[in-house]
Length: 105
Image 1 (tube, rainbow, N blue to C red):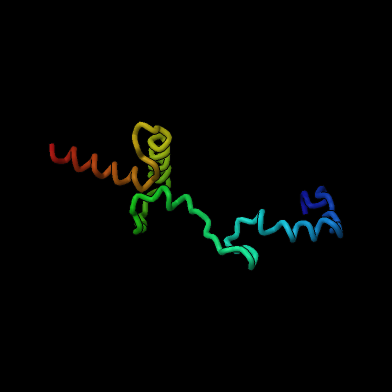
Image 2: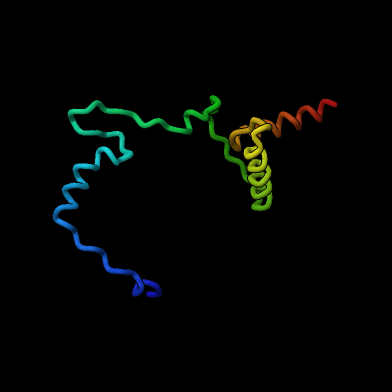
């Protein structure tokens, strides 16, 4: 087993540290559940904040080269804040809109 002999042994549990970690868990955890005397809170999901109302998934088959090209181009447009494109879905919609606009000419 290559590499496993180089791993340091797991540290022993410290009798003082374990209770401290257990009591600090609710404050440090990203879990939505909190102690019984606190109100149940919901985490804010960043994906919801960026949502543009799209709620249907569209799966398509493309070649590996096509996928790489789409992701590369989308990444360029997403990083360029002047485009207003925030995600791959918006990139694809904009690409189709541009295609339709050129077809009308």
